[in-house]
Image 1 (spheres, helix red, strand yellow):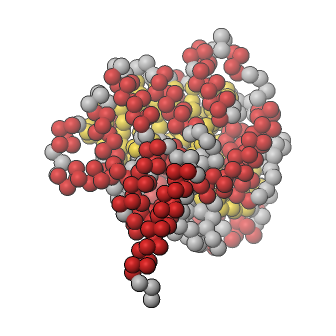
Image 2 (tube, helix red, strand yellow; image 1 turned 45 degrees about the horizontal axis):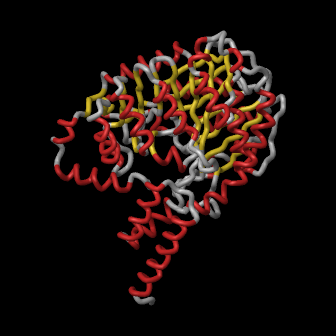
Image 3 (cartoon, one colour; image 1 turned 180 degrees about the vertical axis):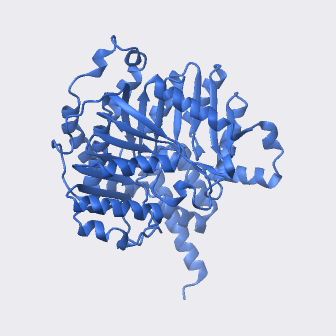
Length: 482
């Protein structure tokens, strides 16, 4: 038996080593670095365990450096195939391009976010509609089916999907499924064994040791996308699990997902191949099977924007910032996690003070401890500037949508929340839609959701029990690192 003093001394020494690493070796923003140093200093034992689970960016930077290099090489090669004409040159011909050229150019240069046109978009706000459309597209697949999800559960909807994919693999369709290696989440191998036996492939992104030992909650692949035959793509907030259909304890589930038909699907396919190559060690590149010539019949210009811990800059957050800054009338945001950093907070505050109608919708029911308190602590900071905030309460359910609609003219739908995890720690993908018809529809959906929501005011926050306000203060301290 080791003396308790010796064990505590070892932990304090390790905390000191971590602190030195945070200051001298890790590229953190000052807010996050100071928060970690405070936790390690004030809570040596708990801070040590917390850092093991949520910290260690130095290890991360080495882990994903090669992925970033490989992604850029593949992106450069395939981008030449996708960029058959320069849409930026059409600025004088199309009002949408001229108005948002700065945003498009920024994302093209910083994120290689290819601009595609003539896309048709369908918007889904219920799990039944989203999965019905996805399953239909899979049944009609002729060449390939590529799925990338944060998780696919072995429940009713997950089993239905696995069975359908197995059927298509037996027909000779190329099937690839990529999921994240979530800590403490075990999906039985038998779910995927029939698919693999039929010739399909299944891979895990950033798996744990032996597939089960994994204590790190950071750097998760939070993307949720699907591509069928290079002609149809899906992206948004829905994972594959019965809770996404309102069948679990959270009750009614409100989310947003889009189906893209047209060249935009090829941009989603590029994203999938980059992640698949990293997870499997494959070297899939451009080929006419995965990147067929697609002639769109829609009206929407799209950009697929991705970010993750393999990039120095946070392109999804920068896209959000740019959208807020170009707003002239309204900014409507929906997110289950609202933990903005200083730059997002300032942008929203300044927009509201400038007379722009800024609205934020968060869940009334949290899915994790402290989420409710953290969300409300950050919302409270913005109310004085004129930002309006709402709790979604339909049928006592939960909102998981990650959207922003600006002026009813431009919108973003994807996997990225408005929190530090999505901005800095996880791999995310959003679709930016430059089309008034679809943006206006998303704005109308938002206004319909307002009827199922209650407004958060300074008065309502002040009426909360003192215990709730204490928890909000505690939650605020941990928000930069969780």
